[in-house]
Length: 109
Image (cartoon, rainbow, N blue to C red):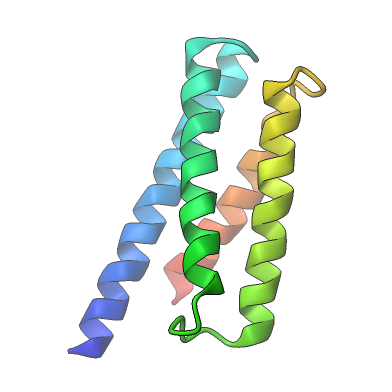
């Protein structure tokens, strides 16, 4: 039963990352400041905020080193997203690449 729940959670996380990647690609195509950009950055911000909050809970069963690494990635993602939002960057590609890597990792588990 617990394995099913964990599998369902991972599947939901993977779907969220797939949606994030889709939105980021649309944002890249339409440029910073576009409606697609605003939507993608908001989604990424919400996704990583939720993930980092979950990773910070003691009940999260992942190894501490993995949790710390994912939180570090989340902080980097949020900074990159803010740089785009503030006009300090216009490149969505690093966000897409990291999100794809995380999504692949979720698919393996």
